[in-house]
Image (cartoon, rainbow, N blue to C red; front, side, top):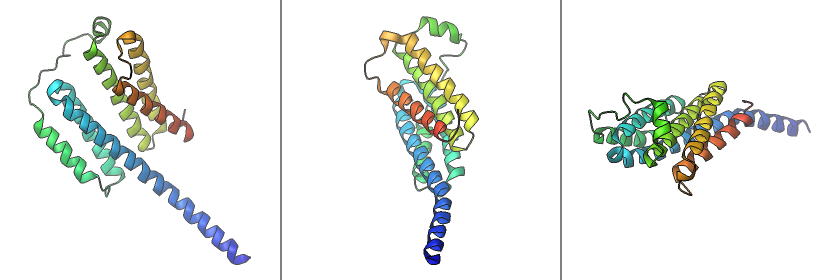
Amino acid sequence: MVKRWKVWLRSLVLGGMLVPTVALAQGADQLALTIEQNLKGIEFRLDLRPQQALRDLEEQRRQLDLLERQAPDHPALPELWQEYERLTAAAPSDVPDPEAGRDAGTEALVDTGPAALDRDVERATTLQAQAESEFLAGHMDSASEILEQAERQIADLEERHGGNIPAGHVPLLVVKEKVDALRQEIVRKGGS
C-alpha cells in the first residue's frame, strides 16, 4: 500500500513538472508554425505590396527573436531564420511608403476596395500576432488588450467593407479563427 502511494505521488509530482514543459513546447511549436505561414504570405506580397511585405518581415524578425528566447533549441529555428534571410535579401530596397502623408481616418472613409480590405486584414493579423507573442511570453493582460484591438479591427473592417468582402475570404477567416482561438486560450489561462 505504501509503495503504491509513493509511486502515485512520484507520478503526480513528475507529471506536474512536465505540464509546463509540454505547454512551453506546444506554444513554441505553434509560434514556429505561425512564423512559417506568415513567411509564406510575405513571399507572395513582395512583388504586389513591397512596403507591407517589409513591415511584415520586421514583425516576423521580432517573432523569430521571441521563439529563439523561448525555445533556443527548437528544430525549426534554423530553417525559419534561413527563410527570413532569403526573403529579406529578395525584398526591394528604398520602396516608397504609399501611405506616407495620408490621413488614416480619411483613407478608411474613401477606400473600401480590395487593397484597403487587404490592409485592414493585415492590421488585424499583425495585432493578433502581437497578442500571441505577449501570450506566449506570459503577459496575459497585455495579450488581452492587444487582442481586443484586433477584435475591434475585425469588427470595423467587416462594417466598413460589408458586401465588398468576398465569400470565404481566406485571410479574414484565418485571422478570425486565430483571434478566437487565442481568446479561448487567454480565458482558459484565467485572463480576461
